[in-house]
Length: 326
Image 1 (cartoon, rainbow, N blue to C red):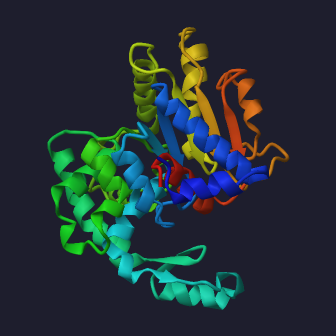
Image 2 (image 1 turned 180 degrees about the horizontal axis):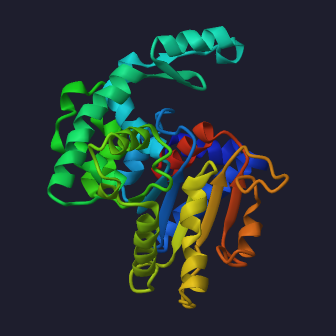
């Protein structure tokens, strides 16, 4: 039985982007019902937007089977977990002058739209603990992916002393408990990636201790091959929140398997939905309509395809609420 939120959107979301939202939610639900698996990609600042409050439950209820996210989303969920009370909201961010922005910097507040992340309590609080985990692995001659190090950090319990939100609202903790597979393309383009690089430059860590993006693609290729097999699932869907590398990287695994590895029995993605406010113009990949992906060997002619041109912080929680029968 659907709850009041789901009933509301079914009754009133009838046209344009609102109708696309409902269609995409119902098709996502249909994918799961027929035994398909789902990849969810997170771009933008979804963790700072506190998407974990609902996305964690999507993970717990097995409505997502693999995640692709930016390094920022990987770390910012943990930052919100340990430093939430130190965040500063700036509702008048559109009115800030360069001088106002500089004053925020001097206070150690790094702004993401209307929210400032506190450098000392967020970045530095994590840094001391994650460095020790990196160093311990290196001393043992072990190598891990960025998300695996984050899982170790969360599951070790060393951060519990800092928790400032309910742990059930952390999507990373929900994922760590399930050991959910994650790919983090371009992890180097993140605060923790920069911090790791600084230790490499100082000679305190080796770059090889961190597994690379190429290794992430090889891992994803194996995962897709195994999980797209007919005896395992009825296809794998692709639910993309935002644009950028979080979506661009994993969707390419299908044409790579088919064309470069010549595994011509590789199935296309079985569902595709993108939530984006990027406009379709002048070669913008993030704003490309789904049909363009057919020409690249990512989607089939009859793959269910949806694009919702709206704010992901509004749309994603509504779709997830629908999937949770809220």
